Length: 343
Image (cartoon, rainbow, N blue to C red; front, side, top):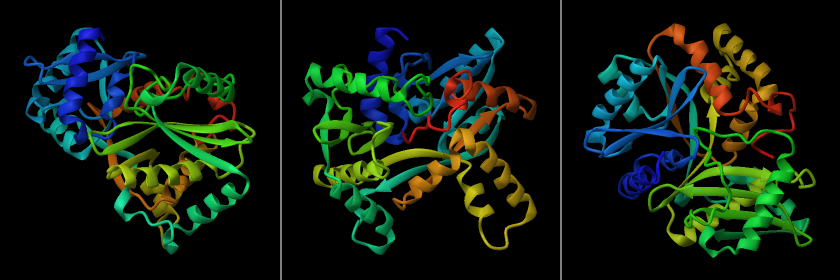
């Protein structure tokens, strides 16, 4: 992706960024880009193990999505890549299927918190309220900054702390990860920290989602941080959003969320129960259930996300390529249950 490409993508995000909560992650440095012939729409992607993985919806004017989708498929055919689109919305999925006759598979749900509906005093949010109050009694304090308000010294400290907390594990992220922290070239990033005894113990980073939204990028905490500090920081972020005119916040993506929910219900059939048990087994490494449970505390709207693929035989290859792109494979994160996006 050239500097000119990045500049054009930022212009499209400025105009159409409200359409997709994860559109800003198109600016990851490890992604390439293909444009429609009018340059009114673009698809960013990464090639992993022979698979060209697009993520999220196309960027730009929806009227130009069909041409850029065809440009992407043509590029894949020319290079012998297996095409796939990971985490696209229902609107984009319908266009992919209509234009290419590819297949759509629901792979999970994104948790969207509507700020006006969030009331920490309501019984529905009792868990978050009690957890936040417990952490505050331990003398934790939260601070919120825009990246443009931070000094170089502050950026250096957060970057160093984040690397130290991550340890030997590989940096995660592809579909919903920017890959850089408090960057001076990203003035609209929102940084939330939790401190105790004058020391930063945890941080969140949000990217812009249009003019009136935020999308969670990074959630990291020190091994010495107390359990519940993430709930405290998200609660503080939602209150900040209400005071600053932000309407909605996208939290983590919960893979196969509906399977966990339906499989645990009374009267669930043997198929869905078996599928849930399989997912619970893999959650020992991929932390799927824990992310679903964590997100549920904030009573979000669950918005489905889809995988688009050509044929069933492509699924294993695309699945492995996605795990590698997200750094679940080829890193130590599969070897340590402590290396999770929750800290």
